[in-house]
Image (cartoon, rainbow, N blue to C red; front, side, top):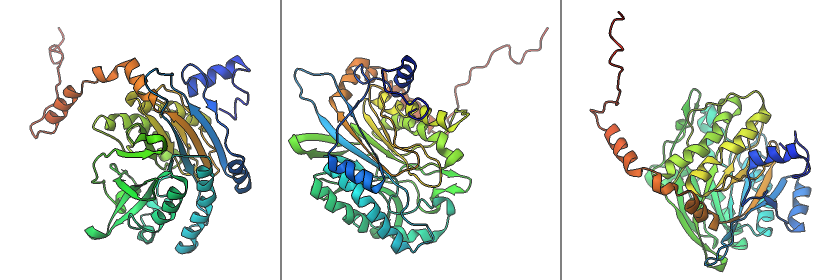
Length: 389
């Protein structure tokens, strides 16, 4: 939208209406930009990565103080060609990410999330087993690299890696490691749904996770209690051109389905999108990915990878359907967003959706569906098979 409608909000009626429909209004007004330290902006300019920052407000309450969390999302391309030695590739990606993470820390980010398997090329479509050399244990090299930043900047870091489970036969998992703001490992979550579509079959490397649907509880400064993936859901993922790019925003919708059970991770399913251009795609992505935030009254941080493919890129969505603009489609970047978590409860109270969610009905239907003797409820027209007079 910034490309096709290069005007400031409020200057032109058409621009304002398009922006309102695509990005929504937060508490009745356009999303505010927030100022960042000059040091962070200088690093962004020097290292040539995109840097944007926005703020989601909540209505002022009489009995609760604002509960503001600053969240950062990082997207990046690989630092070296995939033909380079694996050791050089790992070292290069660390060096590439270091200034971006430093910029996040200098900007006061409380929770930082990296892209899916950030520590290696996204090579799963190749089915070549040599890429398994990048796999590491939860407390491996990439986690140790990030632990120093977490401790230095008092920052929780979500690190999606390929995990090698040493204690269980070196099984491989697609895992998000949660690093606490003291540099400790809080826990991990293994990806629940694995695509198996044609040649793109991630189960060549790993299968569905077995860690359930955890919500990670952590305390930041000012005794602010944060439920990572409870009030804030992070959705690191990767899409490939026309194959799954149109499906990526649907993940935001399906997050709301899985969160009924407790929480999410990376669903891909059907798409009803029929797009004429990439510009339409990125606009619809921003709109559709808000669905999970709306349905569950939480914030969603959506991340994608940049590279030779054309991907939709990081943005955040709020429970009131407002959404930040996304980062560049082809540059490394850091998106920073202030979120007042009070907005989550305010929207729950406003819509009352928990009262009409029909959880008991869905539980009964699913239990019936899982029985071997299940038969769908089909009611036929009694005249359907009668011969016409």
